[in-house]
Image (tube, rainbow, N blue to C red; front, top):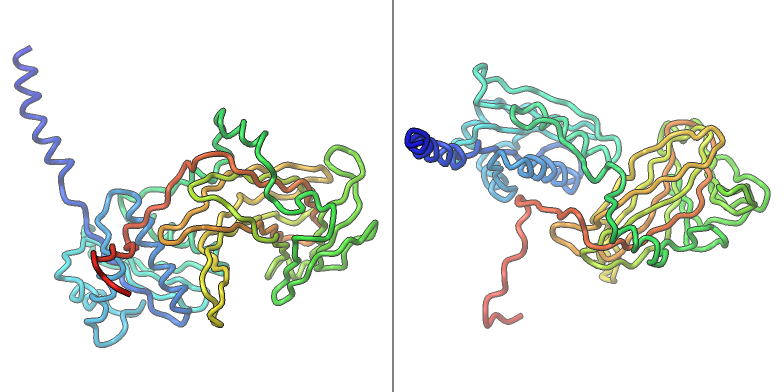
Length: 372
């Protein structure tokens, strides 16, 4: 027994020292390229945030890295030599460096892990054709780093069922405007620059690459009205077709559950829920700014049957309040027609996930006695 106690006393300090060991420092340079500054900063922030959330690295924040990059006489881009990048960041003593650019739809990043014996950067190129592709592109870049592992998305796997949320789902009101498509309000069809209010078409089908409300047989086998989206092959393989709801006022720190029924004879259904905060437009007047986007896991053709999709979302942003939501019914990939019905959005209790991004600093506190 005494021997075991002595062994424990020896091992405990070793365990504590292992836990307190400094984490590898990661320096992610601001991305260069011809993409907009907003897109480049968003990609850089995504790289930092996702790596920081693993808890295995000390990620230098974006402000620090802008200062480091400013020391260079020429912009740090994908073609910048590794020795030049190492020299710029030398005072920060990074173990891992990332630098590159966002050119058109291509995200090009060099990953240099100085812990590896070869000491050579790995060039990685990923396509970011749509804003929602950024998540996957940045994760695939980071997954090439040792100790990162495969990123998991627990909020992408169906619904977090618990007694309280299920009870609220039954009792709370549906916030989705005109979710049964019983009239012509609250929804707009979208195709590239086209943005138009949907119309009731009766027994007719919408024109190709158009959206409308039609009479059909519903999920319960009874006559109903539903949203119909008819798409050509050209549009399916390029921009896709969408229908966007009117804005929905929501409460802070609240989880919401979305459900809808659909029938597809070919197209892939990939809905989004977009979140907005109130800001000012270029004319100085109040305007909505998108600060949150939840991608509902995509689903495919149903072979003439109705299917239901249910998904939870935790609308939030690390710096801005998410005040409104819009449901974006989006289809793409294969030509054909999709019907939607019974769109439901309800509050179902407290959020199950909180957004954190240490790379984004919140505004400092106002000093006592300060004046406007």
